[in-house]
Amino acid sequence: MDLQRASAKSFRRAMLQANLLRITANFDNPVFFVSGGKESKSIHESHKELVRKNRLSDRAYYPNKGHAWLFSDIDTHIQLLRYFFQDGAFPDKLKGF
Image 1 (cartoon, helix red, strand yellow):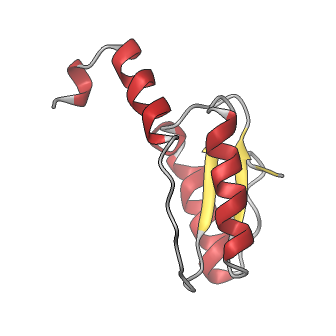
Image 2: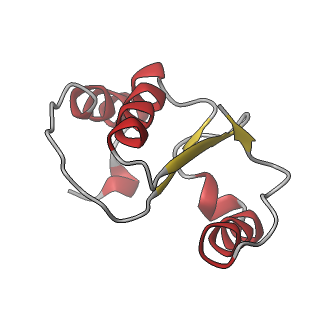
């Protein structure tokens, strides 16, 4: 399916269905979950649950942004990578939970 040609309604429906998936995950690699502030509550909750299951993980959100925030703000994405992997400063535009 060509996602660029999908209607907004179809995309929202697919995302809502994806949010209903139940996954039992066991992992021990560090992960930093970032969601857009405009994403559904279930996305934020799933990140919360994944962080709870992996003590090496963390999470944050980007206020007033949607799912594809990193494509519109590459600099913040790079800052986040430096923060997580190189002990850089936490990006100003992101907010912790």
